[in-house]
Amino acid sequence: MNKRETPISNSDLETKSSNRFNTVIAASIRSRELSNGHLPMVNTKSVTNNVKALEEIAEGKVDVDEYIEKLKKHKK
Image 1: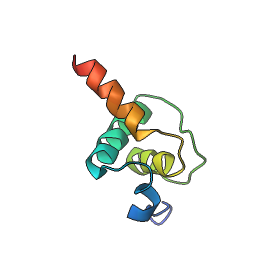
Image 2: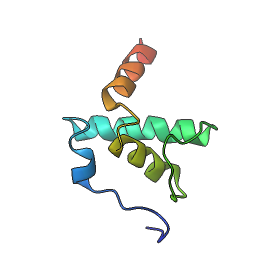
Image 3: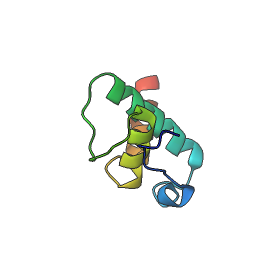
Image 4: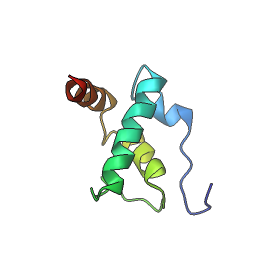
């Protein structure tokens, strides 16, 4: 981990979704959005989009269930 990045623990994320797999999927989707030019929803020193996405989830700015629903609708 880069020293400039804020560590994210499981306890930071566990209350945001009952399913860790869904959290990983939502973070992946959000990370891709950030890579495609979306602006971060939190102030962060993190340099990687993956960590930024996890920070957004931990702070409640990204709703895991909402991202999973978007994914389900996109697959139809």
